[in-house]
Length: 211
Image (cartoon, rainbow, N blue to C red; front, side):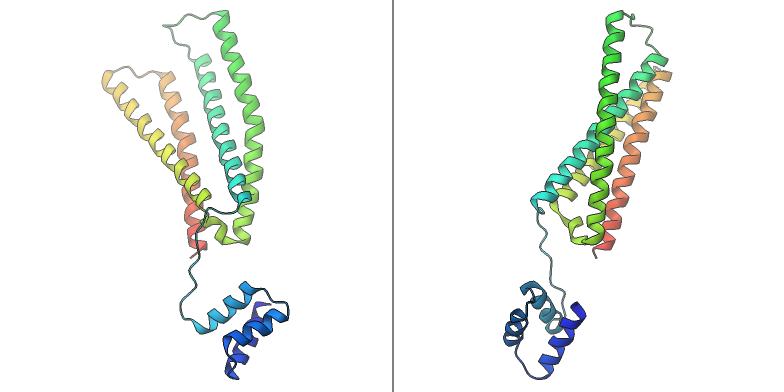
């Protein structure tokens, strides 16, 4: 359809017809104003029309908020679960186990597991839909909500990794490193690192697509 429109515009301009007349003719034939304007501009201008980067539609903002909220809930729940299992596997000898403490820990595990079961599939579903939308319309990737939430996640991940490494070095200098702490460090590093790498690669690929 775009090729037909461009061919007609070229033909009309070669015949000496001015752009306003071409616009009226095409509009009367049912073409949309945006399609006509872009076709005329593509022929008359040597510079690409700059795209206005906005917040995005209300639907895009809503879907991105749902996706990243589900992502944060999934990550926090997974970290809590793994930390709890590490606590059970390597209990702190300085603390005394009690029935209340064990029940409280098990209650937290159940809550985190329930959150993970709901939030992670929700994130996968919404994120898959958003990636499909970006594939169809690359300008969706330029939405302010998407980029802000992605870079905010990268910032939180980077700060978490930095704080984690600083803490490890501190305890190493103090000579108080324990197996339990090292396992927790590995969990945080693996989860935040994997998430940061994935988001960075996604942003990079989307930036290359929209060039």
